[in-house]
Amino acid sequence: MAKVLQGIRVLDFGRYIAGPFCAALLADFGAEVIRVDRVGGSEDRFVMPVTESGEGAFFLQSNRNKRSITLDIDHPQGREVVKRLIRDADVVIANMPPATLANLGLDYESLCAIKPDIILTASSAFGSHADAANRVGFDGVGQAMSGAVYMSGTPESPAKAMVPVVDFATALSCALGTVMALYERRTSGKGQVVEASLLQTALMFASGALIEEAVLSIDRQATGNRSPIHGPSDIFRTRDGWIIVQVIGQPLFRRWVRMIGDPALMNDPRFTDDLRRGENGAALSEMMSAWCASRTREEALAALEAARIPAGPVYSPREALDDPAIHASHAFDWVDYPGLARKAPIVVSPAMLSRTPPSIESRPPTIGEHTTEILHEAGYGDAQIQALRELGVA
Image (cartoon, rainbow, N blue to C red; front, side):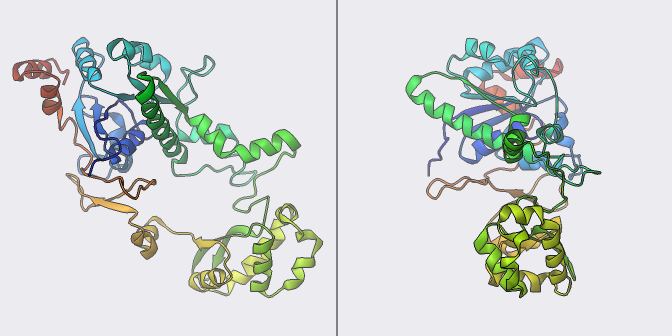
């Protein structure tokens, strides 16, 4: 069965998550992706190492379905190889500041001089505008500058998400933008630049708080896990673990007061709507905490499910891996890799298509695993490849 992006060739110069995971999503749907690694391995390979040779967990997640070529793209001969590869490419992915792209000859103007209909997918920390174009940053910086960290944790101890939500969401936006650019190119015959930034993604996540503050100037403060705009909505301790409960809107609140056996709360002026329930959320969380304290996690969740109130367990990573419902959803593709003690659970694409689904066809590549093969495809003979190796270029 033909895949959606079959015949599309992608050169992936991305590092860490935003660029590489974008390329992985395209590969899941059939694009041929070549990862351009540094000679000896790029730095993002080795974050949170899980293999004998040091490859990291995020590398495994973000680089399935790719081939790897090693190149020193600072070397003139390396630049020549890149130019040859670009001639046969449809998309170049590079999450770097604009000045770095220009220095490497990966800016849009340079790419167009080689392949006029090329699409450049370029994410960065802060965007390409003059005030921020050359600044560097990671996921946590975007979270912090968006207002999200200020609103998390407590006023005395702000907290960021410990998983790179901004990186992965930026990659999703880039993948969508890339597919739209490819779709548009079918009629115009022209390429274009697809841009995204970590900060813009983070601002999108924080948009509710930003709009509220701009319009009402209420200067909200952090309330831990408790929602300030509805309730009870918090994380609660049961006898043997933690759960999250989210009561939003009048129907859910009505069901909640019936569940805890206190229907008089429906007439309490503190709780007449979501806004007041958020303002008085501490009282509601105290009631829900008392209700949870005498129950196991399983008992509490069973009662909440019976009442049709959104709730779930606060899982450790091990518990998430072992959950039967998660397994039933086919969330993971268990992939082997050289040097792994056991197979790794690569999370499959979050977008599924019923007739032309994504799939993981190959494990992430080892460093430069396909260098010779890709150079042959680009027209290099064995002697030329050996010369590149002797120069330290490939």
